[in-house]
Image (tube, rainbow, N blue to C red; front, side, top):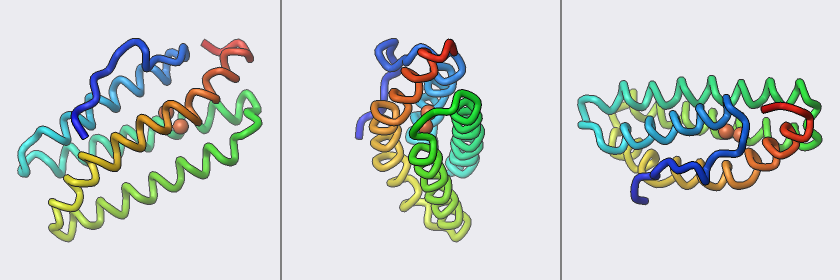
Length: 131
Ligand SMILES: [Fe+2]
Ligand SMILES: [Fe+2]
């Protein structure tokens, strides 16, 4: 998949979420375009950012009582487990598998997740007065 270009059309009107998503795009793109030597650190930065971001969304959902929180948080847990699975592959030396994951699966997941669960959560949050 070609690199994602961040645009205002990807904003959902929640400041922390929009800022996190823009940073995620930059980190995914950096992990796609860096050298093999730089890749492990780039992947760690992406993983750390993702863990922090998904926790911020989970905390928001708990605070506002989002009706579909269980579905959304369990999807967050699934992707974090998946990213740790690929971290293990990286530690085992299978850099090609992790580079392929970051090139295809991760950006596809990001776009789909943003357009579905994150969008629904942001709409509900804004109705609850979050911004
Ligand atoms: Fe998100
Ligand atoms: Fe999310």
